[in-house]
Length: 378
Image 1 (cartoon, rainbow, N blue to C red):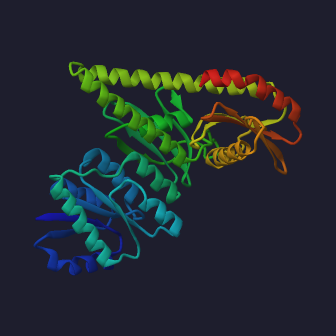
Image 2: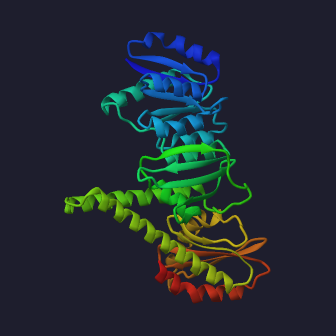
Image 3: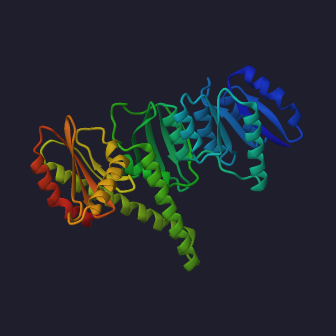
């Protein structure tokens, strides 16, 4: 007999669910709780195979319940149900890597199908499917516009801190890494434990300018690369023990942090030689920003995926016109700023936003002067 715990603060909904699934008792039994604390007491005293929880509840909400489960009951899979508000948010959440999301008001047929599918997966995998990951938890906070501080711990006892205000990530830190670098590092961690707290910083102190999704994508890419490297390494040399493997990963993380810090310093050096710089950054053609210097705190999100697409389009257009040579520079004139972009090789470009009061000729001169140094740094 499988047991499914459903957590929601609407008594009428819980009664309807219990009565509606009476004929399924040969397959699974429904257990209910009115909030997160009651759910944790049930999890402590009996075996639960699947948890389905609402997010917005009194006493202890669904966010805190999921965070606590990541530490105390990490092997119990979960499903989140919520009134997502807009189709965009609903589609974003349903595209995550978690087991499943259910929209409210609940469709009982969809709920039944979700439970049966989850239990079938449990049977196929002999009782082990994963719950909510850190990446998915962060996207859930963004989508639900929650304000909080997350403490994250991995299996090596490393700790990270993430600050969110109304779903916007403000800052992050772990070890010697901060801001974007810290977020990317934490996304690569396996088997994390999460605890959720009140926001422990000033919401006006924003140190992260990149979009959360781009940071999560970069962390996922590095995580995949690390796993592939470890797998190949183990096939060649089977005599290395686990400690040596972890040391190698930590060294790689440190080197990556040093590289990004050096690139940031180079961008700051460039900005110091320019007039009216609002922001300057290096972005890959995949839309992932790898280093940014943002002295004015300007919104530079448009420099990422959007300008990567623009650069690709212009490059192809220039290639199609004979005898013009290679594409070198793109200049966009906005009402309050100039936006200058230049290729650094074919994989990265530097983007510079300058106020209209700045000297454009000076900016172009400095950008050309530093182009080779940026190429070598990459």
